View (cartoon, rainbow, N blue to C red):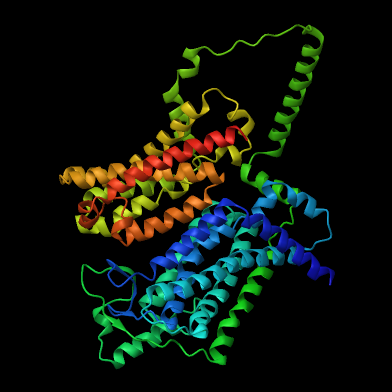
Length: 545
């Protein structure tokens, strides 16, 4: 009973702390909006979820399945970034040192964090369930409400999947190699592979290897269409497919029959989640500083004798300095001289260069080689290849550079020093923004030069808007959340739908003719101005806290 109470209190405290954050509300809002966008009206310019070029009538089964897809795709991505700081926050706030003095064992701690992660994502799942009911009533294509057909796909598809994602988030935080940026990159790669399988080849998936739970539904829908003589090979299964002004072709689908065997198959995935949590307890150091210092010493790779000599020399120098200060410095009144106007306004571009180096530092040589390779490939490859693959790749590659903007002070605990400097909002904030713009210009220069060489001036202007928009989004979210995870979540979704899938109203880089003709870049220019305004407000709020 004591173990159960320990797990419960760990889960409850962590859950309450996280649902009070801005990031939770933003993720909740994004997810609810995605649910709304996945059930568009009949005259919409896109189909949210199509199979063989058709979509189902908005009955309870179809709406519930669509929201289940939202959970197993979108929430799997942004939910991971929302919950992945549960263990790391205890390191940063040093709460872990208090936990280390208690009798809480490692499996108990990681189970509490796993249940906390799952509770956060489940609260979003509950709200999505209510949203699904509202959307069926609002669209009113089929007003017959079948609660079982509506709720079953959302929970049986989504809930086991979220349990595994919650466990993976804990595992990544207990592994030193995956705790930081590389873990985020690894998860993005896993997510890209994971999201493609049920839609591209559902027939190759079986309950033993499809933890997303989408494949059974996809096979059932395809069999229904084939029985009606629809050639599903003529239209792919896709998300957010533009209609091109065509009339939407609809079909009636009564949903998957959720038998006891299928439900048991889905619930068995909780066993994998528990196994991952138990595996996470093995590498967890339980906030032991000795093990962390040992890892740091191995990274430095300095001879012990030389390091000890340096420490001895430093201690001797410090001792002599203290004696000199105490014996020779008289007690005098010291008057501080305020900075003059020239000092307060000078050396701005040096500050921009410093901020640029802070953003770009710490990358391996191969990261820069990939950047150069993307620039050259954008200049040398056919234009259609650039539009489809290379331009989107260039706009996602620096994501972890952008995500560091606006939150260095919180990460390195330098708020009291930085926020006490003169003219902070007028000098440092523009310097950070310009440094981010410079990073974007360099990383996507192949894109801009390509438009310049082919004389596509409208696309070149859209590229210029993109290099202003992305750093503004990163800076604003970094200032308001004191971290980079929310930007990574939001930007990846915007990039995937706008740059990679070329959804017109999200194509912020202007890579398609439709987005440029519709004036979409101008909307993003206005959003950029608003983002900069919110960044200024957020920085002033930080200063006066």
